[in-house]
Image (cartoon, rainbow, N blue to C red; front, side, top):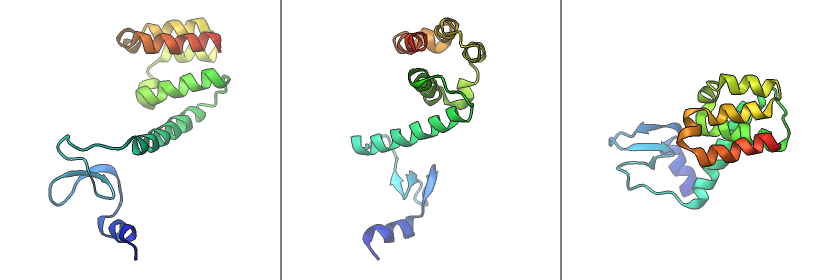
Length: 132
């Protein structure tokens, strides 16, 4: 048995954060999250981002929309950013998406807490919705 196999066997896998027997916050195969001093490499962050994009894309596809590449990506980013539950709170925006009223979609995006608190990011996304 390799070191990696043995560690996987001994640590066990947990997809969610948990406290190990020593009382430390961990995730995965005993990865220490601990006291705020834990760091991850850009490579690990990229892998996590890929997984998160995959999950947001799956949630988007479950809605049955195909708005074209740019608009699909905006909706996926909105789901990534707000989570599916948060995204579904954009009721007026969703209604406008279903009507393909892109100017109204953009207006509803901007007329939100996120639009006010993160104006630069939301402006970029709103413009992509208008331009397609």
